[in-house]
Image 1 (cartoon, rainbow over the protein chains, first blue to last red):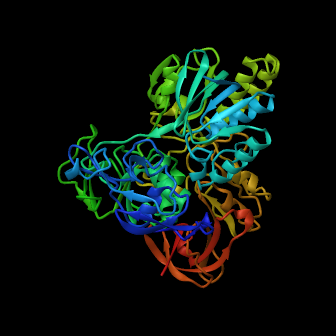
Image 2: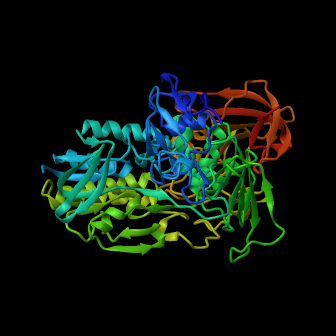
Image 3: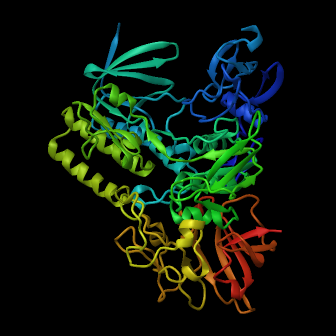
Length: 108
Length: 527
């Protein structure tokens, strides 16, 4: 996936933004400070944000404007955080969500 | 519990909400606008294309620039915008309940304007909720606000203006759009939007829809198939595409829940996009003091939403005595005229669902444009913008009546004529002298104008076309000229490249082709 570095209409994008490091499922990942967590994940090729409670089906970015809640993840220990609306910060701990809890299925 | 009072509370800081706030604040009202997002402007900042309309509607200005102008106007008027503030309730006597962070605050407005906009519709197909399937609006948000590619290979479902415009924007972001698909037999959006996508080589599949999206953890492919008149799949017509992303642009629904909650009389009106409040011409609902404006009271587009917002702002100001009934009438008459002119033409709300086969001028509509996205060679000659004469001249491939006239204003040589009727097809004036300034090419929001010299003397013709992609070819670059259909038709060489502030990021590419292709070559693809 990746970033659009040069855009014919918008020019150079994200030029002045600060790069921050965050954790995605325990791994180090980088993104721009203040962009939605979902944008940083997308730029890093992450597609699956959570698995549904009953059928364990994968879900990812769907509406990107905070309406559908498909993109919720566990952020800094808190489950059900809308990653498309939540700004990325240095050192954030972002985890795939299983069901509606902050724990993996086998620990629920 | 403390309840703060305002003269006017507006919910939603998009085009209509901000416009309403500006009008009210200008009349001395104490106004606050609540918006759940971190930035104001609603969806305007994702609109990177040039808008249609006339000068008063800010035609030929890109949506995000209109957003910047609107924000500046709001700041100048002293409008207070509360961001990250979600309105969760609208109760008796216009009590507004707002969630800000972890707290819930109560406010009271002597008047309230609901300008909450709309949300995207979805269709259900096998795999519709697999990661990689997203709303066209989501793709627009990722690429145009955050500079992230929504995907590499994308299939677009929906040929309304959103589907067409976002497909073009995906191409601009460097994505590969493998197909544009719609279950309807006809393209829903403006022909010019379809044509600028088609000429780059994107195939259109009308009367087709998605049968299945494939992939286990994320999208890896999609199968579409043809549908009959009853939208049932026709066996054996399946086509498969390897894609990582499927965008869905199948309309919008008003987010009218707050109005319903407040007890406003509602109706289910398919022409307005679903559940909408019953309002008068200026946004007044059945509940005294509550008004609505923009997409929440009927799906249209940002230009009309801004006018509706101003109307509701004026109506609320008069309701509370901040202006006289006479002043209100003068203002509203002016705004109504402006709004009426946007609601004309083939795509006007009043014409939704009608089968229009002829233009206002009595010229048959191109059937290829409606079913394939481009006007065929044997159809293009019948439109008044397409003429033949010696020397360079504009060829205007604008073939449907839409409310738009920047081309007429752009030409100070009188080469282009639309007249006072904003929806009339532009005429390329035979008895005029084009000075090759290129302003018409750059100003056409539909990218439908080409400067053509059918014979440059050496067996060649030159065609100047609008170009909004990267990398921008350089003079001397060789490649293929593509037809309106997006198929390579002949060799082409770039002989001139123009970029200018006045063109607002639309570059003008002049290509030289064998002269028999003067009326066929409409896009350039470098080798």
